[in-house]
Image 1 (tube, one colour):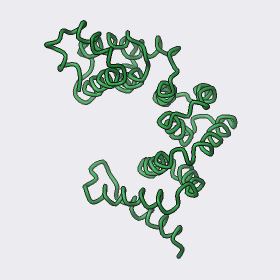
Image 2 (tube, helix red, strand yellow):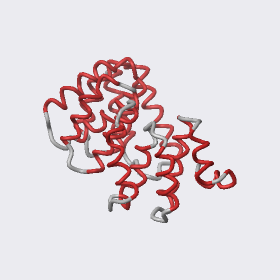
Image 3 (cartoon, helix red, strand yellow):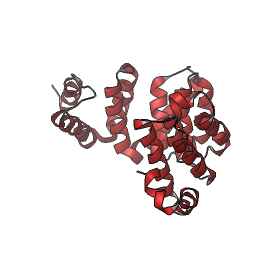
Image 4 (cartoon, helix red, strand yellow):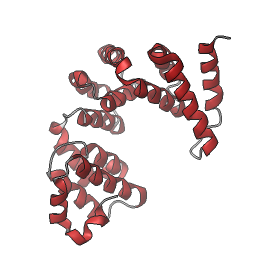
Amino acid sequence: MSGDEKIFDDFGKDNEGYNQERNEAQEREREELIRRIVEEKGENAYDEMISLLEKEDDDPEVREIVTEVLYRLGDRIASKLEKTIKEKIKRGIKNDVPLLYLIDLAGDLGLRKLVTDITKALELYDLEEAQLVIYEALAKLGVGEQFYPLLRYMLLEGEERFMFGAQVAMVLSYLDIPEIISDLVQAIDSGDFKGEELETIKQALSNMINLHPSYKEILITLVGEDNFEKYVR
């Protein structure tokens, strides 16, 4: 068995038994697998990673490992990734889950050449949860302000807030719009969000301040310096 085949043989074995309560040993195995693929195969792993993403599109653990490998390869596979995304969007397959993962990755890698294509991809997805992934990718790429009114409505007024409020907050956190500070404060004060969802909205507020330090003064003006810590993570 060749070294390349051994890696992917291990891939299947390492993925067995994964669940939400992965222990430290499983995490180390996962990290070791990713490291080996990146270091031993490098950009040559691209086609096989894309193939795995397509074949295992119902296995979130495989998808997460594949996208992490591609993320770490970064610039080395950027041009290939751009080509793949363009081709898949042009193909026009509705609700293509692997494409959604690649769009999310494009946002993380800052592939601004894909802005027009990713915007077109919104037409391919019926579910709001999928569309939010695309909105977030566009926001990370420095665009998406045109979707602000819709996102604000989804966070504060629409019935969607009870299902996707925390996800919407994270999308908003990547937009450079000062008014979003007030929107997130309103969401926190609304009482509509509890537990992990509430903490995620606070994290979104923290993200905005980290990205735009001047926004801290806006938050202090809204909630008072003594209450500042209650709104951030």
